[in-house]
Length: 182
Image: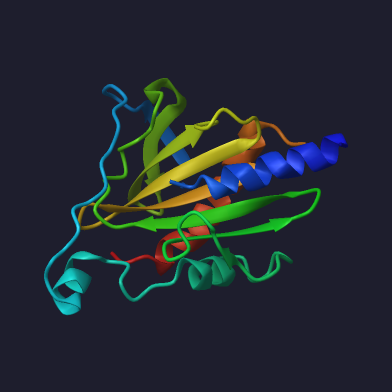
């Protein structure tokens, strides 16, 4: 297997594990902790849509809109969470993923708080996490979406370093942020 093929598999694996700053200021505080799934709603669809700020949004549509001028193919649903996560990649370059998570705080599931930096994207509170899953060239940005929800942008670049991936993730998060509910 070539280095390029191996790196591409790493990129795709990173995108597949999306659980997914232009301004970084301080480390994320607290201890890492596991998160539980939000409780299933037994109420009707209309009342559950009221608590899900993403109910009428498609992560693939958002990703395609944000990346429309960058030469990516159409975004595809992530096999691990096809309703809430999408990804897109270019061979030899890398990829971008987006996951929309209702009921999850943007500071949850950071894993190693020393890898996270708080800041904002277009004024929206966010956390940037370098190599959260341990892969060089990966960077995630967790964006706050009220009420108590988040959007995760993941950039995973082939043959690039993590700092470059974080710059790219920040650029993409800046394009995605205005498309998210306020």
